[in-house]
Length: 254
Length: 228
Image 1 (tube, rainbow over the protein chains, first blue to last red):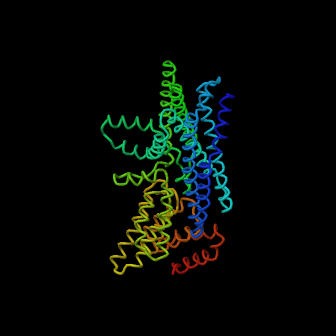
Image 2 (cartoon, rainbow over the protein chains, first blue to last red):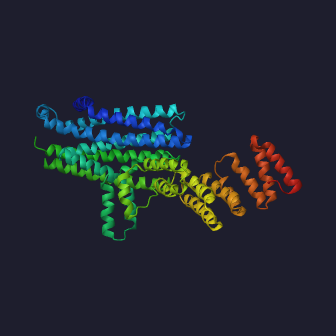
Image 3 (cartoon, each protein chain N blue to C red):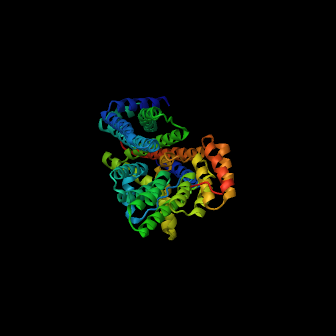
């Protein structure tokens, strides 16, 4: 456990030295701050736009940070050949992969907290302090980002960086469209197609589960039960990503 | 290594079984809590949705800003496709339905010349509002019921329908003026007893309406008519 923690902390330290992540974070803060420019609208419309823009910015830029941080986590070690030194020490490959996942999660967490604090500050400034629904939305966005990071890390154990980026973005888009795909599945009468599509519906990460912001900004309620199941979904999918990462990293010849 | 590979494979399969079961629960709760996306994808819309990904709300906001700009420049007809697009992207945004219905039944109505055209846009406004009500998450709020009731009452002089929708509006949390309009609608619909009862309710519950409600009750009791 201590080894995993040390690898995680080291990954975090390495990442915070990278300027790319700061630039993405600054962009996120600018976009969130810019939502204040909607003051020419009525109070209700303005608040909706602030929330829409902020949630979207936290998620989108958070996803960029998750993908780029995870992408670099393993491949940089291989490129710099530091991994050879590491693996000669009494460190199991599984400790290395899980440690890297911890490190990436820490980076995502810190960036997420900074963007969220800025957003909450903006809401308080607008005299509309966040309610529990805002926190539910943020909680699900955070788990989505961690899942994106986990999947990118898993892909990084057996693909090149370029292919990993394409795959991660592709999964990000497709993962948000699975709910619509399900509507089409329900209309299909061919049993084989339906079966295959149902299987795909389970296999592809359903990021749309985590997306409740469209409902929250217009005042609809989301139960803790839904939030709980979605978090359970996220954790299970993270386990899948980690098992895939462990399998391929242990098989890899280094 | 091979044995370890089987272990991972088994763990992944078990996780997917769990994911499948949890997803069934999530889908059930989405239906229960009206969290499902109301978007129905048509072949031509897939590309647009692909670009939007999970950012439908943001796209709706950008269109709303565009609508504001058309509004301020008096380009009323250009607002119509934007209203349709926003209501498609975010049907739970109740303001798009109420403003859209009002825009058609009042603004466009005022802009067209012939009575046939006016009747057409009045009906379009009503139709748009009713479409908004067809979404279950909008049907348990007063907003669209009130807008329908008001449009029937004020623009259409269709008092039976006005009463029907205003009565539905007051079943949900609502501001005081909804009760006030319902009292007027009862009177115009010839339901004087109900109008008096409704004014008594308004008088007893809303301090700001005390004088008006008292005067209305007196007029209705003495003259049988209160609303000009």
